[in-house]
Image (tube, rainbow, N blue to C red; front, side):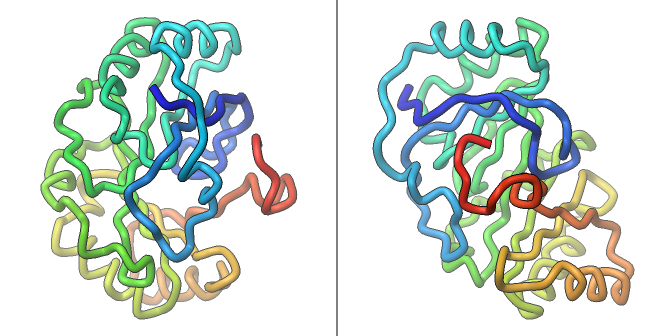
Length: 211
């Protein structure tokens, strides 16, 4: 597997925000979102065996594990890695762009599907069938770059009945939408969603890596 980095910190986003977590970041991505904050993981990384990653995660102690990238679903052995971690008693999450079929993942994996808004420049690549497989523990995340993005997201949320089926996360694009603006829109429209701030960018400098 093409591993870019592995480290233990807090989970910076999602319904697990603030919990100790080991982040396993894989290199390479086949999307180029306008707001991407991990462009450094597009290239580089080193080939690491699945078993080596499992041993590293075990040694770190955190019971929550996030598989991320880049785009983790580009890694052929990702389902095997996830299955081994689940068998070891870890709670396993994956954060994915949602443009690749997630049906190969073990049932116990918590899926965080980053639905690409028009402002990302990649919304046309979404694999919509992924949304129909989501259950209560899973989440959809929308990074909004404008009120137009928010309105588009709200249409998707309502069309796919996401409020009643899984966690819905609305994220202001860092430096483009103020959190208060997004809160005002959410309250106005009575959307059943969670404001999803990147708390690691509050705890540490926004451009610091490995946190």
